[in-house]
Image 1 (cartoon, one colour):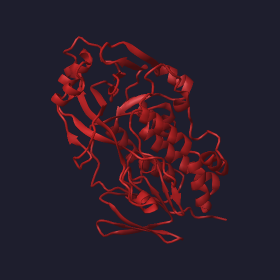
Image 2 (cartoon, helix red, strand yellow; image 1 turned 60 degrees about the vertical axis):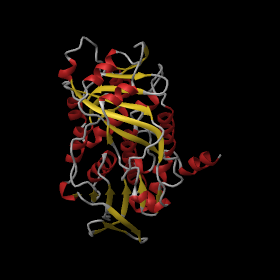
Image 3 (cartoon, helix red, strand yellow; image 1 turned 180 degrees about the horizontal axis):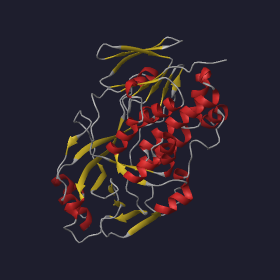
Image 4 (spheres, helix red, strand yellow; image 1 turned 30 degrees about the vertical axis):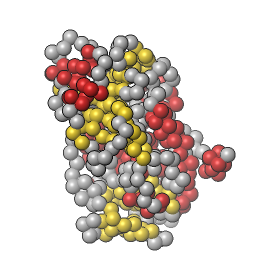
Length: 389
């Protein structure tokens, strides 16, 4: 007997939403993607793709292209911001391929995103669709958008970020928590750095007691060098998702740091500043025909370089659970998904909040060796007992 797969709406075409849609479409699900932005642009940000994420990229079909596109650091170095002394040296490169099953790369977020979006059925990708209302009618979900259009779907995936409309529908309005930290972001032309007799390493995090600067190349030819910071700032009153910063602000924030960091600041042409937002672990990830993933379910500080990774892993696990349980039993599939993502996502949330990841020599295998497609599935009933114990 032939069964028809349910129609699925993915709200949000960021990295998590794009991963979900790509995997769903490859699995034969009629999947529409609704993105509030009018178009995508190559925003100035970098991203780490650990072996745990590259295994998902393999299933999407873009691992080889990403390997060619990205920078392949041999190590994650942590250094003392003032003295330059090494705090840790975490082997990556060939070691990562052998021990964790895939490459560790750093890449421009916009280049990654464009490549992922290209994998989608372009006729089912809709821009300018800001979700306004959600009506789960029991047998289907009705969606209305700010432009007045409507859509319906059998299942809806909320991949719409920290201010998710789907999360609001499930749990009510609640502002995310400002963490008290900001991130400065800038991309620097490697040509400018050539004027300095300094070693600009492929992946290094500069630390002091209450702040840091993470620096890495975002292209395989190492023409673009990117930094992102974590700096305490008591309040965020700007009312926007980011504001412009300046070299002067950077110099003040990183006074006392060594020559390499000062050179990076001197070479900065444009730098932005972003508030880092969090939420406490949510009591609910799904209800009837609605389910959350990524920042909609577990926003976190980027201090492990695993925030997008968790969204992409979520997407893969969600599709795995739908296929495992059978999409006719979506409630069971969603509960299986949550049971197999909650503990890991919450642990990464906590470590990211604490900002301790790889500061000292440690074994990162629990993150990097993880394979979302092969890990044994936890029973939801057991998971619920552990959470309430």
